Length: 207
Image 1 (tube, rainbow, N blue to C red):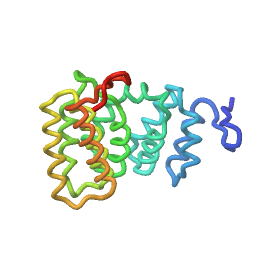
Image 2: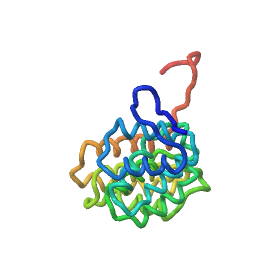
Image 3: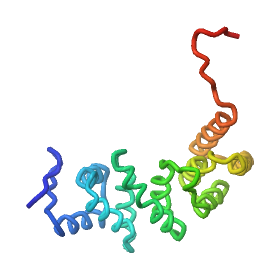
């Protein structure tokens, strides 16, 4: 039985192992955004298909792995719980990874997730903090590390202070527009943590 993609996609995924082989074949070559969207539509909301994408993201074949991780970055919000369920696996892989593209894709996934105060991996936090001022790292990896670090540090004043010290050191460097934006946004979030805006309503006196 074939599983048809949304109208106009022009792609039919067969059931069972046939789908796995077809998706793997697509991800093993140069792929474009429309094709990524078609694979996302096929996988979204289906745990078995999502698990296949993650297994392909771990592939030893570089192009397959990068394309699969790229696909995972395009999953809709409805799949966020599934991504949370594999967060430790993503972090474990990230900490050992040397390929820049794979690191960028994994950090892009991790930077958008929420981290509870009792669910912070210190090895991942240390990793992110170490990348913020690492000028040998691409700008995207440094930006994503800033965003992820803030989501973890915001629960504890001492960690916020440590993050802020790393951000202050960035002022000594020549920064890309993206890094400047990440720095500005994160500093603003830190200020709001320390000086939360209280909504006094519209009935009170105005200064």
